[in-house]
Length: 391
Ligand code: OGA
Ligand code: ZN
Ligand code: ZN
Image (tube, rainbow, N blue to C red; front, side, top):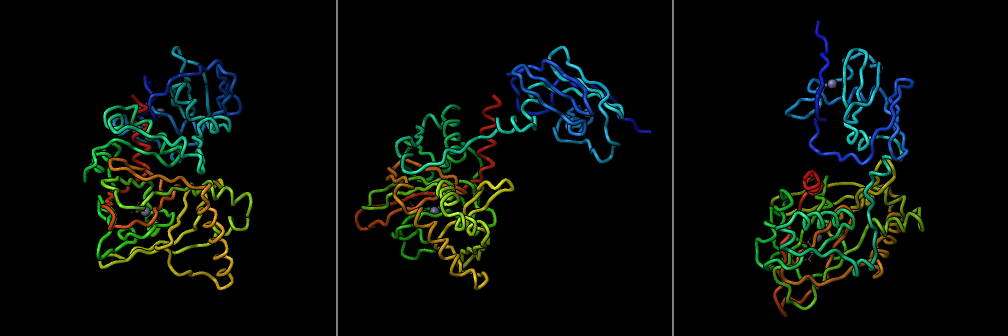
Protein backbone atom coordinates (compact mmCIF):
# COMPACT_ATOMS: atom_id res chain seq x y z
CA UNK A 1 0.00 0.00 0.00
CA UNK A 2 1.23 3.45 -0.81
CA UNK A 3 1.79 5.54 2.24
CA UNK A 4 2.68 9.20 2.27
CA UNK A 5 6.13 9.28 3.80
CA UNK A 6 6.68 12.09 6.23
CA UNK A 7 9.62 14.20 5.12
CA UNK A 8 11.31 17.20 6.62
CA UNK A 9 12.35 20.06 4.41
CA UNK A 10 14.47 22.98 5.39
CA UNK A 11 12.97 25.65 3.20
CA UNK A 12 9.54 26.54 2.05
CA UNK A 13 9.68 25.68 -1.63
CA UNK A 14 8.68 29.06 -2.84
CA UNK A 15 10.83 31.42 -4.87
CA UNK A 16 9.99 34.57 -3.00
CA UNK A 17 11.76 35.27 0.24
CA UNK A 18 9.58 36.11 3.17
CA UNK A 19 11.38 38.31 5.65
CA UNK A 20 10.18 37.48 9.13
CA UNK A 21 9.03 40.79 10.56
CA UNK A 22 6.79 39.08 13.11
CA UNK A 23 7.59 35.99 15.13
CA UNK A 24 5.21 33.24 16.13
CA UNK A 25 4.85 33.60 19.90
CA UNK A 26 2.36 30.83 20.60
CA UNK A 27 0.50 28.16 18.73
CA UNK A 28 -2.48 26.10 19.87
CA UNK A 29 -4.53 23.35 18.30
CA UNK A 30 -8.23 24.19 18.56
CA UNK A 31 -11.03 22.55 16.64
CA UNK A 32 -8.79 21.32 13.80
CA UNK A 33 -7.21 24.77 13.41
CA UNK A 34 -3.71 25.99 14.24
CA UNK A 35 -4.21 29.21 16.19
CA UNK A 36 -1.09 31.33 15.80
CA UNK A 37 -0.36 34.33 18.02
CA UNK A 38 2.12 36.73 16.43
CA UNK A 39 4.63 38.96 18.18
CA UNK A 40 2.68 42.09 17.16
CA UNK A 41 -0.48 40.86 18.87
CA UNK A 42 -2.22 39.63 15.71
CA UNK A 43 -3.85 36.23 15.62
CA UNK A 44 -4.22 33.86 12.67
CA UNK A 45 -6.50 30.84 12.50
CA UNK A 46 -5.29 28.31 9.95
CA UNK A 47 -7.67 25.50 9.00
CA UNK A 48 -6.20 21.98 8.82
CA UNK A 49 -7.46 21.58 5.24
CA UNK A 50 -5.72 24.75 4.14
CA UNK A 51 -2.49 23.83 5.93
CA UNK A 52 -2.43 20.30 4.56
CA UNK A 53 -3.23 21.59 1.05
CA UNK A 54 -0.35 24.06 1.20
CA UNK A 55 2.31 21.76 2.59
CA UNK A 56 5.52 22.47 0.66
CA UNK A 57 7.52 19.35 1.38
CA UNK A 58 9.01 17.63 -1.70
CA UNK A 59 6.21 15.06 -1.65
CA UNK A 60 3.48 17.68 -1.77
CA UNK A 61 5.26 20.13 -4.07
CA UNK A 62 7.66 19.23 -6.85
CA UNK A 63 11.10 20.33 -5.62
CA UNK A 64 12.26 21.59 -9.03
CA UNK A 65 9.04 22.58 -10.75
CA UNK A 66 7.95 24.19 -7.47
CA UNK A 67 4.37 23.36 -8.32
CA UNK A 68 1.78 21.58 -6.22
CA UNK A 69 1.68 17.80 -6.43
CA UNK A 70 -0.56 17.10 -3.47
CA UNK A 71 -4.16 16.47 -4.51
CA UNK A 72 -6.32 17.06 -1.49
CA UNK A 73 -9.40 15.28 -2.86
CA UNK A 74 -7.40 12.03 -2.94
CA UNK A 75 -6.96 12.06 0.81
CA UNK A 76 -9.40 11.67 3.66
CA UNK A 77 -10.22 14.85 5.56
CA UNK A 78 -6.97 15.72 7.35
CA UNK A 79 -6.94 16.13 11.12
CA UNK A 80 -4.27 18.16 12.83
CA UNK A 81 -2.60 15.85 15.35
CA UNK A 82 -0.01 18.23 16.82
CA UNK A 83 1.25 21.79 16.43
CA UNK A 84 4.43 23.34 17.80
CA UNK A 85 7.02 26.04 17.16
CA UNK A 86 10.32 24.76 15.77
CA UNK A 87 13.82 25.81 16.84
CA UNK A 88 14.04 28.45 14.09
CA UNK A 89 10.57 29.83 14.71
CA UNK A 90 8.75 27.75 12.09
CA UNK A 91 5.42 26.08 12.57
CA UNK A 92 5.75 22.29 12.82
CA UNK A 93 2.66 20.21 12.24
CA UNK A 94 1.64 16.59 12.16
CA UNK A 95 -1.52 15.37 10.50
CA UNK A 96 -3.75 12.31 10.39
CA UNK A 97 -3.48 10.57 7.91
CA UNK A 98 0.15 10.69 8.90
CA UNK A 99 2.07 13.58 7.40
CA UNK A 100 4.55 16.11 8.73
CA UNK A 101 4.69 19.69 7.56
CA UNK A 102 6.85 22.63 8.29
CA UNK A 103 5.73 26.18 7.56
CA UNK A 104 8.05 29.15 7.42
CA UNK A 105 6.69 31.91 9.69
CA UNK A 106 7.26 34.60 7.05
CA UNK A 107 5.40 32.57 4.43
CA UNK A 108 2.47 31.97 6.81
CA UNK A 109 2.18 35.61 7.71
CA UNK A 110 2.35 36.59 4.06
CA UNK A 111 -0.41 34.15 3.11
CA UNK A 112 -2.67 34.47 6.16
CA UNK A 113 -6.29 34.75 5.08
CA UNK A 114 -7.68 36.63 8.08
CA UNK A 115 -9.44 39.87 7.06
CA UNK A 116 -6.79 42.05 8.73
CA UNK A 117 -3.99 40.24 6.88
CA UNK A 118 -5.71 40.42 3.51
CA UNK A 119 -6.29 44.14 4.11
CA UNK A 120 -2.56 44.59 4.96
CA UNK A 121 -1.58 43.07 1.61
CA UNK A 122 -3.76 45.32 -0.52
CA UNK A 123 -1.82 47.66 -2.79
CA UNK A 124 -3.92 50.82 -2.89
CA UNK A 125 -4.37 52.72 -6.13
CA UNK A 126 -3.90 56.47 -6.01
CA UNK A 127 -6.90 57.84 -7.89
CA UNK A 128 -6.20 61.24 -9.41
CA UNK A 129 -7.46 64.30 -11.22
CA UNK A 130 -5.52 67.20 -12.73
CA UNK A 131 -3.48 67.58 -9.49
CA UNK A 132 -1.36 64.63 -10.66
CA UNK A 133 0.35 67.08 -13.03
CA UNK A 134 2.22 68.35 -9.93
CA UNK A 135 3.37 64.94 -8.73
CA UNK A 136 3.53 62.73 -11.75
CA UNK A 137 6.44 60.32 -11.29
CA UNK A 138 9.23 61.06 -13.77
CA UNK A 139 11.97 58.47 -14.07
CA UNK A 140 15.30 59.19 -15.73
CA UNK A 141 16.12 56.93 -18.67
CA UNK A 142 19.59 55.96 -17.42
CA UNK A 143 18.25 55.14 -13.95
CA UNK A 144 15.53 53.01 -15.54
CA UNK A 145 17.89 51.15 -17.86
CA UNK A 146 20.79 50.70 -15.45
CA UNK A 147 19.50 50.55 -11.90
CA UNK A 148 17.02 48.30 -10.14
CA UNK A 149 15.85 51.28 -8.12
CA UNK A 150 14.91 53.18 -11.29
CA UNK A 151 12.94 50.24 -12.60
CA UNK A 152 11.20 49.65 -9.25
CA UNK A 153 10.23 53.34 -9.09
CA UNK A 154 8.80 53.17 -12.61
CA UNK A 155 6.81 49.98 -12.01
CA UNK A 156 5.55 51.10 -8.60
CA UNK A 157 4.29 54.40 -10.04
CA UNK A 158 2.62 52.57 -12.93
CA UNK A 159 0.84 50.26 -10.51
CA UNK A 160 -0.21 53.06 -8.15
CA UNK A 161 -1.10 55.89 -10.59
CA UNK A 162 -1.46 54.00 -13.86
CA UNK A 163 0.73 56.68 -15.45
CA UNK A 164 4.48 57.28 -15.40
CA UNK A 165 6.82 59.38 -17.52
CA UNK A 166 10.29 58.33 -18.65
CA UNK A 167 12.58 61.22 -19.52
CA UNK A 168 15.93 61.66 -21.23
CA UNK A 169 16.03 58.71 -23.65
CA UNK A 170 17.85 58.98 -26.97
CA UNK A 171 15.18 60.24 -29.38
CA UNK A 172 15.57 57.48 -31.95
CA UNK A 173 13.28 54.97 -33.56
CA UNK A 174 13.44 51.49 -32.03
CA UNK A 175 14.49 52.79 -28.62
CA UNK A 176 11.03 51.91 -27.28
CA UNK A 177 11.74 48.24 -27.85
CA UNK A 178 14.85 48.32 -25.66
CA UNK A 179 12.90 50.16 -22.99
CA UNK A 180 9.98 47.71 -23.13
CA UNK A 181 12.25 44.69 -23.01
CA UNK A 182 13.86 45.98 -19.83
CA UNK A 183 10.46 45.15 -18.30
CA UNK A 184 9.29 42.13 -20.28
CA UNK A 185 8.06 40.77 -23.60
CA UNK A 186 6.01 42.98 -25.90
CA UNK A 187 2.55 41.83 -26.89
CA UNK A 188 2.01 41.23 -30.58
CA UNK A 189 -1.26 42.72 -31.88
CA UNK A 190 -2.84 43.65 -35.20
CA UNK A 191 -0.52 46.68 -35.08
CA UNK A 192 2.55 44.44 -34.95
CA UNK A 193 5.22 44.61 -32.25
CA UNK A 194 6.21 48.27 -32.46
CA UNK A 195 3.82 50.59 -34.24
CA UNK A 196 4.46 54.04 -35.67
CA UNK A 197 1.99 56.81 -34.96
CA UNK A 198 2.39 59.34 -37.75
CA UNK A 199 0.02 61.21 -39.99
CA UNK A 200 -0.10 59.17 -43.23
CA UNK A 201 -1.90 59.45 -46.53
CA UNK A 202 -3.80 56.13 -46.22
CA UNK A 203 -4.37 55.59 -42.50
CA UNK A 204 -5.90 52.35 -41.26
CA UNK A 205 -6.47 53.83 -37.78
CA UNK A 206 -7.57 57.18 -36.36
CA UNK A 207 -4.21 57.51 -34.60
CA UNK A 208 -2.47 57.76 -38.00
CA UNK A 209 -4.24 61.00 -38.90
CA UNK A 210 -3.67 64.49 -37.53
CA UNK A 211 -7.09 64.35 -35.83
CA UNK A 212 -7.45 64.85 -32.14
CA UNK A 213 -8.08 61.63 -30.22
CA UNK A 214 -10.59 61.77 -27.41
CA UNK A 215 -9.64 59.99 -24.22
CA UNK A 216 -9.75 56.26 -24.84
CA UNK A 217 -8.38 52.90 -23.86
CA UNK A 218 -6.47 50.99 -26.53
CA UNK A 219 -7.70 47.75 -28.11
CA UNK A 220 -11.13 47.88 -26.46
CA UNK A 221 -12.09 45.55 -29.34
CA UNK A 222 -10.03 42.67 -27.89
CA UNK A 223 -11.37 40.13 -25.41
CA UNK A 224 -8.41 40.86 -23.20
CA UNK A 225 -7.03 44.31 -24.00
CA UNK A 226 -3.33 44.77 -23.18
CA UNK A 227 -2.69 46.09 -19.67
CA UNK A 228 -0.07 48.65 -20.69
CA UNK A 229 0.50 50.99 -23.57
CA UNK A 230 3.91 52.61 -24.02
CA UNK A 231 4.17 55.66 -26.27
CA UNK A 232 7.59 57.03 -27.12
CA UNK A 233 8.10 60.47 -28.63
CA UNK A 234 10.68 60.34 -31.42
CA UNK A 235 9.78 63.81 -32.66
CA UNK A 236 7.00 66.17 -31.61
CA UNK A 237 7.57 69.46 -33.43
CA UNK A 238 4.18 70.03 -35.00
CA UNK A 239 1.84 72.63 -33.54
CA UNK A 240 -0.70 70.84 -31.34
CA UNK A 241 -0.60 67.15 -30.52
CA UNK A 242 -0.47 67.62 -26.74
CA UNK A 243 -1.21 64.48 -24.76
CA UNK A 244 -4.18 64.14 -22.44
CA UNK A 245 -4.66 61.54 -19.69
CA UNK A 246 -7.58 60.71 -17.45
CA UNK A 247 -8.13 58.29 -14.58
CA UNK A 248 -11.23 56.40 -15.68
CA UNK A 249 -11.48 54.66 -12.27
CA UNK A 250 -11.52 57.98 -10.41
CA UNK A 251 -14.24 59.39 -12.66
CA UNK A 252 -16.22 56.15 -12.40
CA UNK A 253 -15.99 56.31 -8.59
CA UNK A 254 -17.37 59.87 -8.76
CA UNK A 255 -20.23 58.48 -10.84
CA UNK A 256 -20.82 55.63 -8.42
CA UNK A 257 -21.25 58.20 -5.62
CA UNK A 258 -23.08 60.96 -7.46
CA UNK A 259 -25.04 59.26 -10.27
CA UNK A 260 -25.39 55.63 -9.14
CA UNK A 261 -27.89 54.72 -11.83
CA UNK A 262 -25.53 55.84 -14.56
CA UNK A 263 -22.68 53.95 -12.94
CA UNK A 264 -24.81 50.86 -12.58
CA UNK A 265 -25.87 50.93 -16.23
CA UNK A 266 -22.28 51.22 -17.44
CA UNK A 267 -21.31 48.20 -15.35
CA UNK A 268 -24.17 46.04 -16.70
CA UNK A 269 -24.79 47.15 -20.27
CA UNK A 270 -22.77 45.34 -22.92
CA UNK A 271 -20.93 47.46 -25.49
CA UNK A 272 -19.46 46.18 -28.74
CA UNK A 273 -16.11 47.28 -30.14
CA UNK A 274 -14.55 46.50 -33.49
CA UNK A 275 -11.41 47.13 -35.53
CA UNK A 276 -11.29 45.97 -39.12
CA UNK A 277 -9.03 46.45 -42.08
CA UNK A 278 -7.86 44.27 -44.99
CA UNK A 279 -6.24 41.71 -42.71
CA UNK A 280 -8.45 41.45 -39.63
CA UNK A 281 -11.87 41.92 -38.09
CA UNK A 282 -11.40 41.96 -34.32
CA UNK A 283 -14.42 42.35 -32.11
CA UNK A 284 -15.20 42.21 -28.42
CA UNK A 285 -18.21 42.83 -26.24
CA UNK A 286 -18.18 43.86 -22.61
CA UNK A 287 -19.37 46.38 -20.06
CA UNK A 288 -17.80 49.82 -20.19
CA UNK A 289 -17.00 49.59 -16.48
CA UNK A 290 -16.10 46.05 -15.49
CA UNK A 291 -16.34 45.12 -11.82
CA UNK A 292 -14.77 42.20 -10.01
CA UNK A 293 -16.62 39.91 -7.59
CA UNK A 294 -15.97 42.40 -4.76
CA UNK A 295 -17.58 45.24 -6.71
CA UNK A 296 -14.24 46.94 -7.37
CA UNK A 297 -13.54 48.37 -10.81
CA UNK A 298 -11.07 46.17 -12.65
CA UNK A 299 -11.25 47.42 -16.24
CA UNK A 300 -12.72 50.20 -18.33
CA UNK A 301 -13.30 49.84 -22.07
CA UNK A 302 -13.80 53.22 -23.66
CA UNK A 303 -13.01 54.04 -27.26
CA UNK A 304 -15.34 56.06 -29.44
CA UNK A 305 -13.87 55.18 -32.84
CA UNK A 306 -13.85 51.46 -32.07
CA UNK A 307 -17.34 51.45 -30.58
CA UNK A 308 -19.86 49.55 -32.74
CA UNK A 309 -23.56 50.20 -33.18
CA UNK A 310 -25.45 49.33 -29.97
CA UNK A 311 -26.76 45.78 -30.07
CA UNK A 312 -29.03 46.02 -27.01
CA UNK A 313 -32.78 45.90 -26.31
CA UNK A 314 -34.75 48.86 -27.63
CA UNK A 315 -35.72 49.99 -24.14
CA UNK A 316 -32.01 50.41 -23.32
CA UNK A 317 -31.01 52.64 -26.23
CA UNK A 318 -31.86 56.03 -24.79
CA UNK A 319 -30.72 55.39 -21.19
CA UNK A 320 -27.47 53.90 -22.51
CA UNK A 321 -26.70 57.01 -24.59
CA UNK A 322 -27.52 59.06 -21.51
CA UNK A 323 -25.18 57.03 -19.29
CA UNK A 324 -22.35 57.18 -21.81
CA UNK A 325 -22.78 60.93 -22.20
CA UNK A 326 -22.66 61.47 -18.42
CA UNK A 327 -19.43 59.48 -18.05
CA UNK A 328 -17.85 61.10 -21.07
CA UNK A 329 -18.70 64.66 -20.01
CA UNK A 330 -17.01 64.03 -16.66
CA UNK A 331 -13.95 62.60 -18.41
CA UNK A 332 -13.77 65.73 -20.55
CA UNK A 333 -13.77 67.96 -17.47
CA UNK A 334 -10.34 69.61 -17.31
CA UNK A 335 -10.25 68.89 -13.55
CA UNK A 336 -10.10 65.20 -14.40
CA UNK A 337 -7.26 65.50 -16.89
CA UNK A 338 -3.50 65.63 -16.90
CA UNK A 339 -2.03 67.33 -19.98
CA UNK A 340 1.53 67.45 -21.23
CA UNK A 341 3.44 67.69 -24.45
CA UNK A 342 5.72 64.69 -24.87
CA UNK A 343 9.21 65.95 -25.73
CA UNK A 344 11.42 63.96 -28.07
CA UNK A 345 13.05 61.25 -25.95
CA UNK A 346 10.19 61.03 -23.47
CA UNK A 347 7.99 57.99 -23.07
CA UNK A 348 4.68 57.70 -21.29
CA UNK A 349 3.33 54.43 -19.92
CA UNK A 350 -0.36 54.03 -19.14
CA UNK A 351 -2.14 51.20 -17.35
CA UNK A 352 -4.57 50.64 -20.20
CA UNK A 353 -7.34 49.00 -18.14
CA UNK A 354 -7.57 52.16 -16.06
CA UNK A 355 -5.87 55.26 -17.46
CA UNK A 356 -7.22 56.71 -20.68
CA UNK A 357 -5.06 58.58 -23.11
CA UNK A 358 -5.76 60.97 -25.94
CA UNK A 359 -4.22 63.84 -27.84
CA UNK A 360 -5.08 67.23 -29.30
CA UNK A 361 -5.22 67.60 -33.08
CA UNK A 362 -1.96 68.70 -34.69
CA UNK A 363 -0.97 70.45 -37.89
CA UNK A 364 1.44 68.22 -39.85
CA UNK A 365 2.47 71.22 -41.99
CA UNK A 366 4.12 72.92 -39.02
CA UNK A 367 6.57 70.19 -38.02
CA UNK A 368 7.13 66.46 -37.71
CA UNK A 369 5.27 64.39 -35.13
CA UNK A 370 6.33 60.78 -34.78
CA UNK A 371 5.42 58.51 -31.89
CA UNK A 372 6.25 54.85 -31.54
CA UNK A 373 4.10 52.64 -29.41
CA UNK A 374 3.85 49.11 -28.12
CA UNK A 375 1.62 47.10 -25.85
CA UNK A 376 2.39 44.76 -23.00
CA UNK A 377 0.53 42.65 -20.52
CA UNK A 378 0.48 43.80 -16.92
CA UNK A 379 1.42 40.27 -15.81
CA UNK A 380 4.98 40.85 -16.98
CA UNK A 381 5.21 44.13 -15.11
CA UNK A 382 4.06 42.62 -11.84
CA UNK A 383 6.33 39.64 -12.39
CA UNK A 384 9.30 41.94 -12.96
CA UNK A 385 8.61 43.75 -9.71
CA UNK A 386 8.40 40.47 -7.79
CA UNK A 387 11.75 39.35 -9.23
CA UNK A 388 13.31 42.65 -8.17
CA UNK A 389 11.82 42.32 -4.69
CA UNK A 390 13.20 38.80 -4.41
CA UNK A 391 16.73 40.20 -4.49
C1 OGA B 1 -2.54 55.59 -30.07
C2 OGA B 1 -2.73 56.93 -29.49
C3 OGA B 1 -1.79 59.09 -29.07
C4 OGA B 1 -0.84 60.09 -29.68
O1 OGA B 1 -1.71 55.45 -30.95
O2 OGA B 1 -3.22 54.67 -29.58
O3 OGA B 1 -3.63 57.10 -28.73
O4 OGA B 1 -0.37 60.93 -28.93
N1 OGA B 1 -1.83 57.88 -29.79
O5 OGA B 1 -0.59 60.04 -30.86
ZN1 ZN C 1 3.90 17.56 2.48
ZN1 ZN D 1 -4.44 55.05 -28.11
